[in-house]
Length: 345
Ligand code: SF4
Image 1 (cartoon, rainbow, N blue to C red):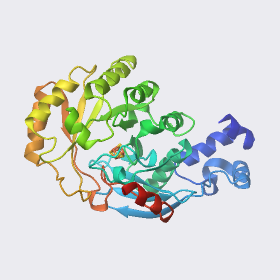
Image 2 (image 1 turned 90 degrees about the horizontal axis):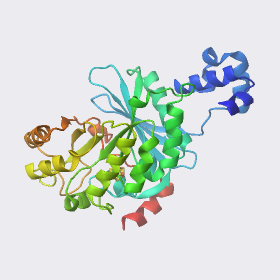
Image 3 (image 1 turned 90 degrees about the vertical axis):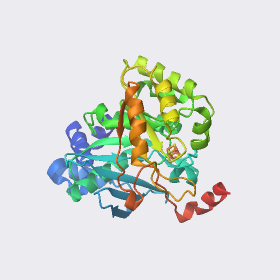
Image 4 (image 1 turned 120 degrees about the horizontal axis):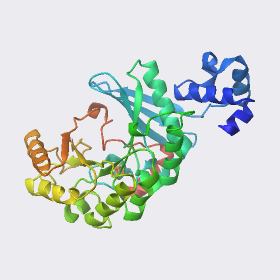
Protein backbone atom coordinates (compact mmCIF):
# COMPACT_ATOMS: atom_id res chain seq x y z
CA UNK A 1 0.00 0.00 0.00
CA UNK A 2 2.85 2.39 0.86
CA UNK A 3 4.49 1.72 -2.48
CA UNK A 4 1.22 2.21 -4.32
CA UNK A 5 0.53 5.42 -2.39
CA UNK A 6 3.96 6.70 -3.41
CA UNK A 7 3.33 5.97 -7.11
CA UNK A 8 -0.13 7.55 -7.05
CA UNK A 9 0.99 10.52 -4.91
CA UNK A 10 -1.30 9.84 -1.97
CA UNK A 11 -2.46 7.11 0.42
CA UNK A 12 -6.11 7.95 -0.28
CA UNK A 13 -5.59 7.27 -3.98
CA UNK A 14 -3.85 3.98 -3.20
CA UNK A 15 -6.78 2.89 -1.06
CA UNK A 16 -9.25 4.00 -3.72
CA UNK A 17 -7.43 2.03 -6.41
CA UNK A 18 -7.53 -1.09 -4.25
CA UNK A 19 -11.20 -0.50 -3.54
CA UNK A 20 -11.86 -0.42 -7.29
CA UNK A 21 -9.84 -3.59 -7.89
CA UNK A 22 -11.52 -5.42 -5.02
CA UNK A 23 -14.90 -4.65 -6.59
CA UNK A 24 -13.76 -5.93 -9.98
CA UNK A 25 -13.31 -2.58 -11.75
CA UNK A 26 -10.32 -1.88 -13.94
CA UNK A 27 -8.85 1.49 -12.90
CA UNK A 28 -9.80 2.98 -16.29
CA UNK A 29 -13.50 2.41 -15.57
CA UNK A 30 -13.49 3.42 -11.91
CA UNK A 31 -13.32 7.22 -11.88
CA UNK A 32 -16.37 7.16 -9.57
CA UNK A 33 -14.17 5.41 -6.99
CA UNK A 34 -10.69 6.69 -7.71
CA UNK A 35 -11.44 10.32 -8.58
CA UNK A 36 -10.06 12.38 -11.47
CA UNK A 37 -6.53 12.93 -10.05
CA UNK A 38 -6.05 9.28 -9.12
CA UNK A 39 -7.41 8.24 -12.50
CA UNK A 40 -4.84 10.33 -14.34
CA UNK A 41 -1.99 8.76 -12.35
CA UNK A 42 -3.39 5.24 -12.65
CA UNK A 43 -3.93 5.57 -16.39
CA UNK A 44 -0.56 7.18 -16.90
CA UNK A 45 1.20 4.29 -15.12
CA UNK A 46 -1.14 1.69 -16.59
CA UNK A 47 -1.91 0.31 -13.11
CA UNK A 48 -4.17 -2.65 -12.95
CA UNK A 49 -3.97 -3.80 -16.55
CA UNK A 50 -2.94 -7.40 -16.00
CA UNK A 51 -2.42 -8.52 -19.58
CA UNK A 52 -4.90 -11.35 -18.93
CA UNK A 53 -7.80 -12.47 -21.04
CA UNK A 54 -11.05 -14.22 -20.14
CA UNK A 55 -10.95 -16.70 -23.02
CA UNK A 56 -14.15 -18.53 -22.11
CA UNK A 57 -17.03 -18.11 -19.71
CA UNK A 58 -19.54 -20.91 -19.29
CA UNK A 59 -22.67 -21.25 -17.22
CA UNK A 60 -24.08 -24.50 -15.76
CA UNK A 61 -27.81 -25.01 -15.14
CA UNK A 62 -27.32 -24.57 -11.39
CA UNK A 63 -25.90 -21.04 -11.93
CA UNK A 64 -22.26 -22.06 -11.46
CA UNK A 65 -20.07 -20.01 -13.77
CA UNK A 66 -16.62 -21.08 -14.96
CA UNK A 67 -14.00 -18.63 -16.21
CA UNK A 68 -11.10 -19.76 -18.33
CA UNK A 69 -8.35 -17.20 -17.74
CA UNK A 70 -5.31 -16.88 -19.97
CA UNK A 71 -2.33 -15.34 -18.19
CA UNK A 72 0.48 -13.29 -19.68
CA UNK A 73 2.64 -16.30 -20.56
CA UNK A 74 -0.26 -18.08 -22.32
CA UNK A 75 -0.88 -20.59 -19.51
CA UNK A 76 -4.56 -21.02 -18.64
CA UNK A 77 -6.33 -21.58 -15.34
CA UNK A 78 -9.93 -22.15 -14.39
CA UNK A 79 -11.75 -20.17 -11.74
CA UNK A 80 -15.27 -21.15 -10.71
CA UNK A 81 -18.04 -18.98 -9.21
CA UNK A 82 -20.69 -20.87 -7.25
CA UNK A 83 -23.86 -19.08 -6.10
CA UNK A 84 -25.41 -20.45 -2.89
CA UNK A 85 -28.78 -22.22 -3.14
CA UNK A 86 -30.48 -19.51 -1.07
CA UNK A 87 -29.11 -16.78 -3.36
CA UNK A 88 -27.38 -14.93 -0.52
CA UNK A 89 -23.73 -15.28 -1.55
CA UNK A 90 -21.29 -16.41 -4.18
CA UNK A 91 -18.18 -18.49 -3.51
CA UNK A 92 -15.17 -18.41 -5.79
CA UNK A 93 -13.00 -21.49 -6.16
CA UNK A 94 -9.45 -20.37 -7.01
CA UNK A 95 -6.44 -22.22 -8.37
CA UNK A 96 -2.98 -22.11 -6.80
CA UNK A 97 -1.03 -23.88 -9.58
CA UNK A 98 -1.32 -24.61 -13.29
CA UNK A 99 -1.84 -28.36 -13.12
CA UNK A 100 -0.80 -30.34 -10.06
CA UNK A 101 1.77 -32.99 -9.20
CA UNK A 102 -0.26 -34.82 -6.53
CA UNK A 103 -1.74 -37.08 -9.23
CA UNK A 104 -5.05 -37.89 -7.48
CA UNK A 105 -6.61 -40.61 -9.61
CA UNK A 106 -10.16 -39.16 -9.52
CA UNK A 107 -9.11 -35.62 -10.51
CA UNK A 108 -8.76 -34.13 -14.00
CA UNK A 109 -6.11 -31.65 -12.79
CA UNK A 110 -4.10 -34.56 -11.38
CA UNK A 111 -4.06 -36.10 -14.86
CA UNK A 112 -2.65 -32.88 -16.37
CA UNK A 113 0.54 -33.10 -14.38
CA UNK A 114 2.29 -30.04 -13.00
CA UNK A 115 3.05 -27.07 -15.25
CA UNK A 116 3.91 -24.20 -12.92
CA UNK A 117 3.14 -22.41 -9.68
CA UNK A 118 0.98 -19.29 -9.65
CA UNK A 119 2.38 -16.11 -8.11
CA UNK A 120 0.46 -14.32 -5.34
CA UNK A 121 -0.56 -11.69 -7.94
CA UNK A 122 -2.02 -14.39 -10.17
CA UNK A 123 -4.05 -15.80 -7.27
CA UNK A 124 -5.36 -12.32 -6.46
CA UNK A 125 -6.13 -11.62 -10.12
CA UNK A 126 -8.52 -14.60 -10.12
CA UNK A 127 -10.46 -12.99 -7.28
CA UNK A 128 -10.50 -9.71 -9.22
CA UNK A 129 -11.90 -11.41 -12.34
CA UNK A 130 -14.38 -13.39 -10.25
CA UNK A 131 -15.66 -10.25 -8.50
CA UNK A 132 -15.90 -8.59 -11.91
CA UNK A 133 -17.82 -11.50 -13.45
CA UNK A 134 -20.14 -11.73 -10.42
CA UNK A 135 -20.88 -8.01 -10.63
CA UNK A 136 -21.50 -7.99 -14.38
CA UNK A 137 -23.72 -11.10 -14.21
CA UNK A 138 -25.58 -9.72 -11.17
CA UNK A 139 -24.74 -12.76 -9.07
CA UNK A 140 -25.12 -12.62 -5.26
CA UNK A 141 -22.23 -10.84 -3.46
CA UNK A 142 -18.96 -12.73 -3.73
CA UNK A 143 -17.74 -12.97 -0.13
CA UNK A 144 -16.32 -16.48 0.12
CA UNK A 145 -13.14 -18.02 -1.29
CA UNK A 146 -12.07 -21.65 -1.39
CA UNK A 147 -8.62 -22.79 -2.52
CA UNK A 148 -9.97 -25.92 -4.15
CA UNK A 149 -9.30 -25.22 -7.81
CA UNK A 150 -6.31 -26.47 -9.74
CA UNK A 151 -3.20 -27.28 -7.72
CA UNK A 152 -2.07 -28.22 -4.24
CA UNK A 153 -1.82 -24.99 -2.18
CA UNK A 154 0.88 -26.35 0.16
CA UNK A 155 3.16 -27.07 -2.79
CA UNK A 156 3.02 -23.31 -3.41
CA UNK A 157 2.68 -22.18 0.19
CA UNK A 158 4.72 -18.99 0.01
CA UNK A 159 2.59 -17.45 -2.76
CA UNK A 160 -0.63 -18.69 -1.15
CA UNK A 161 0.32 -17.10 2.19
CA UNK A 162 1.18 -13.78 0.53
CA UNK A 163 -2.12 -13.83 -1.35
CA UNK A 164 -4.02 -14.68 1.87
CA UNK A 165 -2.47 -11.70 3.65
CA UNK A 166 -3.65 -9.36 0.88
CA UNK A 167 -7.07 -10.99 0.63
CA UNK A 168 -7.65 -10.40 4.35
CA UNK A 169 -6.06 -6.93 4.50
CA UNK A 170 -8.77 -4.38 5.32
CA UNK A 171 -7.25 -1.92 2.80
CA UNK A 172 -7.13 -4.46 -0.01
CA UNK A 173 -9.68 -7.24 -0.60
CA UNK A 174 -10.89 -7.18 3.03
CA UNK A 175 -12.27 -10.75 3.19
CA UNK A 176 -12.88 -12.13 6.70
CA UNK A 177 -10.53 -15.04 7.45
CA UNK A 178 -13.53 -17.24 8.22
CA UNK A 179 -14.69 -16.62 4.64
CA UNK A 180 -11.60 -18.25 3.12
CA UNK A 181 -10.80 -21.99 3.14
CA UNK A 182 -7.52 -23.55 2.11
CA UNK A 183 -7.92 -27.17 1.15
CA UNK A 184 -4.96 -29.55 0.96
CA UNK A 185 -4.36 -33.26 0.51
CA UNK A 186 -1.59 -32.80 3.12
CA UNK A 187 1.49 -33.73 1.07
CA UNK A 188 3.79 -34.20 4.11
CA UNK A 189 3.69 -33.41 7.85
CA UNK A 190 6.12 -30.52 7.28
CA UNK A 191 3.97 -29.09 4.50
CA UNK A 192 0.93 -29.27 6.80
CA UNK A 193 2.81 -27.38 9.53
CA UNK A 194 3.06 -24.40 7.13
CA UNK A 195 -0.67 -23.85 7.70
CA UNK A 196 -0.16 -22.77 11.29
CA UNK A 197 -0.26 -19.04 10.49
CA UNK A 198 -2.55 -19.02 7.46
CA UNK A 199 -5.41 -16.51 7.90
CA UNK A 200 -8.07 -18.94 6.65
CA UNK A 201 -10.07 -22.01 7.63
CA UNK A 202 -8.20 -25.26 7.07
CA UNK A 203 -9.55 -28.20 5.11
CA UNK A 204 -8.00 -31.64 4.60
CA UNK A 205 -8.92 -33.67 1.53
CA UNK A 206 -8.67 -37.07 3.21
CA UNK A 207 -10.64 -39.28 0.76
CA UNK A 208 -9.70 -42.48 2.64
CA UNK A 209 -8.56 -43.23 6.17
CA UNK A 210 -6.68 -46.45 5.47
CA UNK A 211 -3.21 -46.25 3.94
CA UNK A 212 -3.86 -48.71 1.11
CA UNK A 213 -7.00 -46.98 -0.23
CA UNK A 214 -5.47 -43.52 0.31
CA UNK A 215 -2.47 -44.58 -1.77
CA UNK A 216 -4.79 -45.74 -4.56
CA UNK A 217 -6.65 -42.40 -4.62
CA UNK A 218 -3.70 -40.07 -3.86
CA UNK A 219 -0.72 -42.07 -5.18
CA UNK A 220 1.84 -39.47 -4.11
CA UNK A 221 0.97 -40.06 -0.43
CA UNK A 222 4.33 -40.92 1.18
CA UNK A 223 3.28 -40.84 4.85
CA UNK A 224 0.82 -42.81 6.92
CA UNK A 225 -2.57 -41.27 7.56
CA UNK A 226 -1.74 -41.18 11.29
CA UNK A 227 1.39 -39.12 10.60
CA UNK A 228 -0.59 -36.64 8.50
CA UNK A 229 -3.42 -36.53 11.07
CA UNK A 230 -0.94 -35.84 13.88
CA UNK A 231 0.55 -32.91 11.95
CA UNK A 232 -2.96 -31.43 11.56
CA UNK A 233 -3.58 -31.97 15.30
CA UNK A 234 -0.39 -30.04 16.10
CA UNK A 235 -1.41 -27.16 13.81
CA UNK A 236 -4.96 -27.01 15.22
CA UNK A 237 -3.68 -26.92 18.82
CA UNK A 238 -1.39 -24.00 17.93
CA UNK A 239 -4.34 -22.20 16.37
CA UNK A 240 -6.51 -22.57 19.47
CA UNK A 241 -8.32 -25.87 18.84
CA UNK A 242 -10.26 -24.61 15.83
CA UNK A 243 -12.29 -27.02 13.70
CA UNK A 244 -10.78 -28.90 10.82
CA UNK A 245 -12.89 -29.30 7.69
CA UNK A 246 -12.44 -32.65 5.99
CA UNK A 247 -13.42 -33.65 2.45
CA UNK A 248 -14.10 -37.13 1.18
CA UNK A 249 -14.81 -37.82 -2.50
CA UNK A 250 -17.25 -40.73 -2.43
CA UNK A 251 -16.44 -43.47 -4.96
CA UNK A 252 -18.67 -46.46 -5.43
CA UNK A 253 -17.06 -49.63 -4.07
CA UNK A 254 -13.70 -47.93 -3.47
CA UNK A 255 -13.87 -45.92 -0.23
CA UNK A 256 -17.56 -45.92 0.74
CA UNK A 257 -18.19 -49.08 2.82
CA UNK A 258 -19.25 -49.05 6.50
CA UNK A 259 -15.72 -50.30 7.36
CA UNK A 260 -14.24 -47.30 5.56
CA UNK A 261 -16.57 -45.05 7.54
CA UNK A 262 -15.48 -46.66 10.83
CA UNK A 263 -11.83 -46.21 9.88
CA UNK A 264 -12.58 -42.55 9.16
CA UNK A 265 -14.11 -42.12 12.65
CA UNK A 266 -11.06 -43.75 14.21
CA UNK A 267 -8.63 -41.56 12.27
CA UNK A 268 -10.39 -38.25 12.89
CA UNK A 269 -11.88 -38.56 16.36
CA UNK A 270 -8.62 -37.70 18.16
CA UNK A 271 -8.31 -34.32 16.43
CA UNK A 272 -8.87 -31.26 18.61
CA UNK A 273 -12.05 -29.22 17.98
CA UNK A 274 -15.17 -30.60 16.29
CA UNK A 275 -14.16 -32.06 12.94
CA UNK A 276 -16.61 -31.42 10.10
CA UNK A 277 -16.64 -33.91 7.27
CA UNK A 278 -18.04 -33.01 3.84
CA UNK A 279 -18.99 -36.01 1.71
CA UNK A 280 -18.72 -35.17 -1.99
CA UNK A 281 -20.19 -37.52 -4.59
CA UNK A 282 -17.51 -38.18 -7.25
CA UNK A 283 -17.81 -36.01 -10.38
CA UNK A 284 -17.21 -37.91 -13.59
CA UNK A 285 -13.92 -37.17 -15.40
CA UNK A 286 -14.12 -40.18 -17.69
CA UNK A 287 -12.22 -42.58 -15.44
CA UNK A 288 -13.15 -46.08 -16.56
CA UNK A 289 -13.56 -47.72 -13.16
CA UNK A 290 -14.85 -44.88 -10.96
CA UNK A 291 -18.53 -44.12 -10.35
CA UNK A 292 -20.16 -41.93 -7.72
CA UNK A 293 -21.43 -43.68 -4.59
CA UNK A 294 -25.21 -44.08 -4.41
CA UNK A 295 -27.20 -41.63 -2.24
CA UNK A 296 -28.12 -44.53 0.09
CA UNK A 297 -24.47 -45.52 0.56
CA UNK A 298 -23.47 -41.93 1.26
CA UNK A 299 -26.32 -41.61 3.76
CA UNK A 300 -25.16 -44.71 5.62
CA UNK A 301 -21.56 -43.44 5.60
CA UNK A 302 -22.77 -40.14 7.01
CA UNK A 303 -24.78 -41.91 9.73
CA UNK A 304 -21.70 -43.85 10.90
CA UNK A 305 -19.59 -40.68 11.04
CA UNK A 306 -22.27 -38.88 13.03
CA UNK A 307 -22.64 -41.81 15.43
CA UNK A 308 -18.87 -41.59 15.92
CA UNK A 309 -19.17 -37.95 17.07
CA UNK A 310 -18.16 -36.19 13.84
CA UNK A 311 -20.21 -33.52 12.09
CA UNK A 312 -20.93 -34.92 8.63
CA UNK A 313 -22.73 -33.28 5.72
CA UNK A 314 -23.31 -34.30 2.13
CA UNK A 315 -22.34 -31.65 -0.38
CA UNK A 316 -24.40 -31.49 -3.53
CA UNK A 317 -22.60 -31.48 -6.83
CA UNK A 318 -22.39 -28.05 -8.48
CA UNK A 319 -21.28 -27.18 -12.00
CA UNK A 320 -20.85 -30.76 -13.23
CA UNK A 321 -22.65 -29.97 -16.51
CA UNK A 322 -19.93 -27.49 -17.45
CA UNK A 323 -17.00 -29.51 -16.05
CA UNK A 324 -16.74 -26.92 -13.29
CA UNK A 325 -17.27 -29.26 -10.36
CA UNK A 326 -14.68 -30.49 -7.85
CA UNK A 327 -12.06 -32.64 -9.56
CA UNK A 328 -13.12 -31.66 -13.08
CA UNK A 329 -10.85 -28.67 -13.64
CA UNK A 330 -8.22 -29.04 -16.31
CA UNK A 331 -6.82 -26.74 -18.95
CA UNK A 332 -4.66 -27.18 -21.95
CA UNK A 333 -2.93 -24.48 -23.96
CA UNK A 334 -1.21 -25.10 -27.21
CA UNK A 335 1.98 -23.91 -25.56
CA UNK A 336 1.72 -26.62 -22.93
CA UNK A 337 0.35 -29.50 -24.96
CA UNK A 338 3.80 -30.89 -25.52
CA UNK A 339 4.54 -30.75 -21.80
CA UNK A 340 1.31 -32.54 -20.98
CA UNK A 341 1.86 -35.18 -23.62
CA UNK A 342 5.17 -36.13 -22.09
CA UNK A 343 3.70 -36.13 -18.58
CA UNK A 344 0.96 -38.53 -19.53
CA UNK A 345 3.27 -41.11 -21.04
S1 SF4 B 1 -7.45 -33.32 -6.12
FE1 SF4 B 1 -6.29 -31.45 -5.68
S2 SF4 B 1 -4.29 -32.23 -4.97
FE2 SF4 B 1 -5.29 -33.95 -6.03
S3 SF4 B 1 -4.51 -33.82 -8.15
FE3 SF4 B 1 -6.47 -32.68 -8.05
S4 SF4 B 1 -5.84 -30.54 -7.72
FE4 SF4 B 1 -4.09 -31.84 -7.17
